Length: 364
Ligand code: IPM
Ligand code: MN
Image (cartoon, rainbow, N blue to C red; front, top):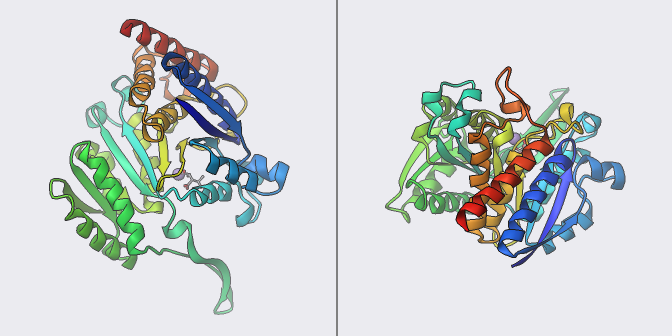
């Protein structure tokens, strides 16, 4: 197959981890006789510096024309004092909206060999395998108005949490469809004891659930969900939640894997290209030092192969290679224990490439 991939390296460690991911994609392409064609475009701080906007029109055009989008990370202290509409993050939110990527899938799988690098007890996290399905184009992130105004003679600021039935319905459906091929359980997370938007969320969740009689639907308040995630994470299969709750819970859940540097994500919509990115940020403190953990971005390309290109075997190969390097004891700084040797970004990438060769050799 021939696939066009738009690459948005972005800021900070973005370009480094994206480079690693592309090397892995190329190796898979070689083994399976695919051709991946890469077109680079600017997003975030780098776009602000060079084009004076976090999301140039050319970037949107290139993304829309492609079969899939690979993103590194955006943001950094350099752009932190810019007004809201000019921040790098606005570019990321903009491209999610432009591509109508309403569903953000964030799988959380604990690699057994990594349980030692988590701050949690291994018996709590061994065997964790859950999927956070985060609504990505609505809620507080996009609700209007979102502004400063004068209230009772003083400065105030507001954001709007708004969800329509159809927005809730499509994300819930996504969650149920995923649960079908997993362990048949959906936990819908809301704050229905306080928020009207959550009460509608719960109503719609129940309605959609009627179409999936074989799947268990449970409702959980977000504060309780935050607690349950570290108390007993193995109770979860698919967690479906609104944009902001999903943002917060997925950072928390990343700790079940030992490091934020391990979590990939897929953002998908209705038919167009999906966007694949690690959930970690641009890590400006280690940018350009060849220290970043590339595994989350590499795992994100596996999600691209699976969800956008239907290349399941190829995706499994990448995931198996990641497991192999971890089982073999290879660690970047973020996942190593004190005193353990740590690999650089490029060394870790080389280990993944080697693992792919070895796994293929065994197969053939
Ligand atoms: C994420 C990030 C983004 C978000 C930021 C960078 C805008 O934290 O993908 O989780 O909040 O969605
Ligand atoms: Mn986040």
